[in-house]
Image: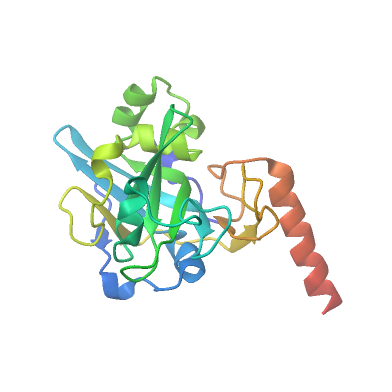
Length: 225
């Protein structure tokens, strides 16, 4: 597992990041959720570049009872019907914006919630924005990462494959082993293992017992096979 990049504490260093093309993104929601682990969210602002590696993501595929799209289209979720690779933003409990990546072809609503990032660039700016110097508190959790990267409702509908300021990329940072477990904070379809994360990464959010249970279950399957 790669060591936390943020521990270098040198946000002035230039990290090579290549923009992802839409043709590289899987069309299937669950496949795309797994694919996004290790990829980079970049927000280029006048004050500097903010970026972080995706280390945790939850899939909400078509027809998912836990998804905002389950009851059909509404003005609030219009962006979920765009091509995969666009942004869907929602405001959670009137307190936090949440970054989602639209994940199916045009006309089919589905999305992937980005739950945690490992900070790469612009760490000092993130610290000022989040009013904390604790690295693990900057982008561990969907509300925190949106605040740190200054992502809000204005980003809704942005094309991450063509936008000049908010985009998806890939770096040369190695990706650790990817595991999956159940999603967090939902009541419907709560037992579906649609949460993907980089094993052992300290920036992964949520209850640790869920991660430990997933690791134990995977080991048991391997040993029995």
